[in-house]
Length: 411
Image (tube, rainbow, N blue to C red; front, top):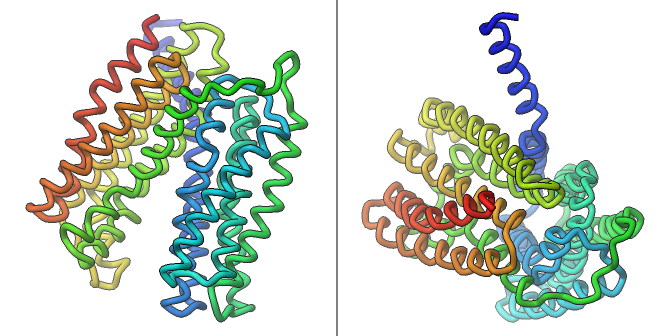
């Protein structure tokens, strides 16, 4: 075999590995579930009044944030150490989630943003959602990828089913869809716990002693990661106004959406694979393929977004919104900066020791602070300036995070 043929075979083998890469497969599933989430919302928007749909959207946003915070980092603790969860740990997570969900729901009711019935359904969804996240962490650590993807994206498919049923059922208030959503999450939580208890690792004890210093660091990282995805939505109304928030919402659904899928895919698959790696060489190989897969896809996405977004947005919105190439480029940089930080964070979570995780927690809060400061400073230049400011502020912290990640692979 000649050098040219050998090179071709090597290239084909590399391409084959990339196409079978877990992060790409996860991103594809997240893409479909993201479409289900969007379509379910649109169907409910067609059947509910503006006020009632706003209440449902508020409850759904709180659900998505709190189910990742309520486990208090125990899900990441299980994922990092491949521990066997038991009923005691699941009950502990449920108790934390109940306290947090009840407090938030009571506050929302006091503001007349939700009715008591709607808030009760939200609380049940938060508790069962936190249980699903915790049980799912155990399944992911055992390479139960299909089950992991099913439980991770289950809420989106449930939302699509509720939206489709609403076309025939036509709910009057948000209470009905929220109650069905809570019931669906309860069933899914029971299945997730049963699966986690069934697929126990032999020779591995259940969680007996919890390192709360480590879990608090992991909680901080998870909380910042969750808020980081929404940081622009928090900054735009106060600095630019609702008109720019509407433009950003369109931009997030077109130019930024693909990068968020990549972030979700990387976070889902990279950490458990690194934890299962038996030596440093295997971890480096995993990270190398991850960079090639996510980086290559991000490059293709950037080219496509820069080319198509300014042309598609006016067509998709029937001329209501126009997005220029400068704003599109700022959105791409915003997505790329978050992808770089997410990958470094995943490497540190998978490879780092307790001290490294503690430093990473501090850097995560620094990322959020500098991203907010950068966005606020850049808002004087409009929405593009805000997006650039968030990106530059985040990248300033991503540099030391990447260095930490590199060192974790060097020893």
